Length: 253
Image (cartoon, rainbow, N blue to C red; front, side, top):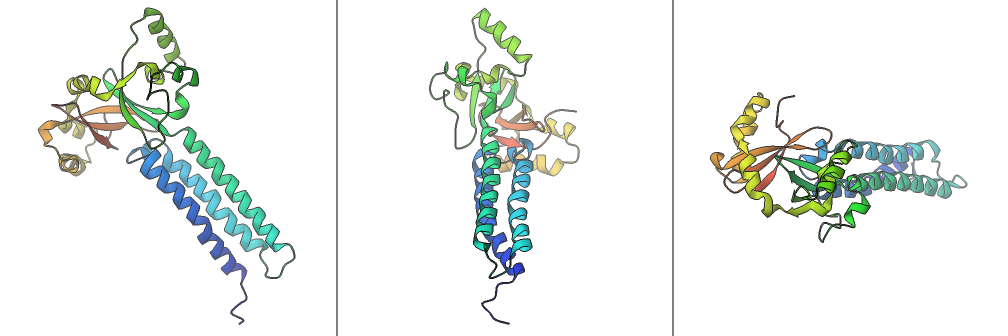
């Protein structure tokens, strides 16, 4: 066999390898920046990525396998069209993920809320002071939220909550996390209580203090609503310090 002859199977394999490169770049951005840690699954990053990867990686090589024939007239145009189609699908999927990426992990009253980019109205961001008037690009940041003092604003926010835009969607009421750390400390529950909601996760719960570098008695947790499922936020019981998130259930449901 002529070693310079490229079969359709080899062409499809080469196309598969080339298609995997940009998909891996998108995966790295999602996992390490936009949807870090437990958020990758809970906030829908994994499902959306699998859809994008399936369309991008599978469709191109499959079409190449079907149409490829070395020496075929117009083959270059056909392959370029397939590549452009893949690029369009990848770009659209990445844009959707970008628009719905987590931008804030907000402490509100007695719990945490995950805030996505498309949940913060532009007109409300215009009323916020820096840095809360911009949406983070490098991953979600931890903040606190204070209730408005003005009765009219309280009523407006309450009515908005009925339509799905609760207090965390109003960046003009964001404050540095340090300002609410004492409230977090007061609301935190002993991490041992997680075993009530996760009876089969004893080993994972026992490993949490070592994972985050604190003593068990110094670690607490609070729930976080994150979309697909609720997550557990680990905090310092004596400091209110944000430690990280876990996929463990934070309450019974």
